[in-house]
Structures are given as C-alpha cells and as structure tokens.
Image (cartoon, rainbow, N blue to C red; front, side):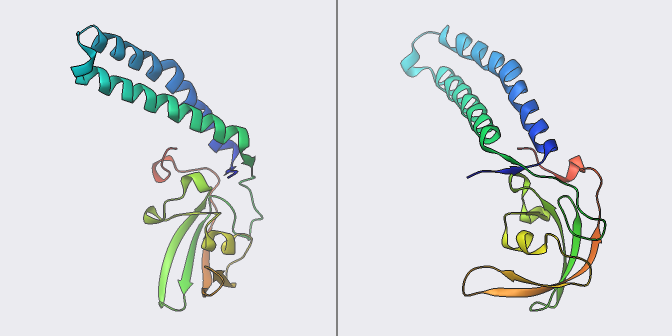
Length: 167
C-alpha cells in the first residue's frame, strides 16, 4: 500500500532512519559482541536477546525505507475555509447526539484513541475538503453510513509534536 505522507512526515522518517543506522545499529552490534564474548552461545540468553534487538532494528530500517520509496507526497495546505491535513475538526454526530473533536492526519500518524483520524479512514475521507456547517455522509461500508455536521474547523499551521506519535 502506498502511504500518503507530507513533507514533514518524510523528514521525520529520514531522521529516524539516520538515527537507527548511525546510533542504534552501532550500539546493538556492540551489545551482540559483548554477549558473544560471554561463552556458550546455545545457552546465552543475552546473546539471543541482543541478536533479536539488532534484527528488530534492521527490520524497522527496511520498513521505513520501503515506505519512503513507495510513498505519495501530499500537501498539508488547504483553502482557508475547508478541512485539510493537520486541521482540527469539531463534528456533531446526528445518530449519537454527541460532539466529537478530531485532527485529520496522514495514515502513518492515525490514532483514533488519541483523536487523530487518518485521511484514509472513512471519516477522514468524508471530511476532507468540506467546510463549517456542511452535513457530510460518512460511508463506512456498502451497507452502513452515518451523517455528521461540521461545527468548527481549526486551522493548524504547524504540527504539534506532543499530539502526534512518532512512526
């Protein structure tokens, strides 16, 4: 699947890859060497744990590099009166008679439990491009959907680091 990333997402992923290659890789290789020096490898738990952690780091590097290679870069700017990436949206759910607040983010940052809704999710897709006061149908699947009313759109010029989890 091709991830939709912003320029900021790409920069953060590149920084994580560089950190993993230059810092963590060196530390993990050293940990493997130290554990190997302790003797019998078949019963050496420290050696097995160090190898596992080294392999986990290498897998993460490959995953992030593959993500960058196949990613589609999207703009995080939108018109001043419409919903776009990194905007916070207050919506009224008609079926539940509740008001909910979400922030629209790229798919790699989505975390519905933290109020971060991906542009790939049904509600994210439905809200993009709409304006305050619009009544929007959120199609969940072929048989089910629901209506929400956009109450408020809060434009965000930059990302709040404390609200967005790392990759």
